[in-house]
Length: 125
Image (cartoon, rainbow, N blue to C red; front, side, top):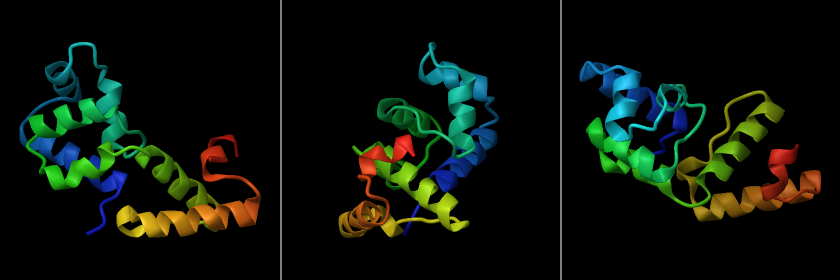
């Protein structure tokens, strides 16, 4: 099963609302220094919090580990940024199915050939 940041955000929102919690309340429960906007950006599928905070949010909301664990892995933000950049270029949502290493490697090589830039340089495009 492939699970996108948008899917995770939707699950966070639904779980939070089911528990009758506000974004502010979730933010304060997981870490008193956390701002409501962190929860809002996650729910909108716009930005991931750091892995430990994401884990705390999802555990608080009883979201199964299988859904959020892939988003705590090293390099996931880079892959999400890559998917968004390619999506903008082709005019549709692009998702690397299950974010497998082989697909990631092929995509990275293709970007290098097509644009003459490494995947790590996409933030500068």
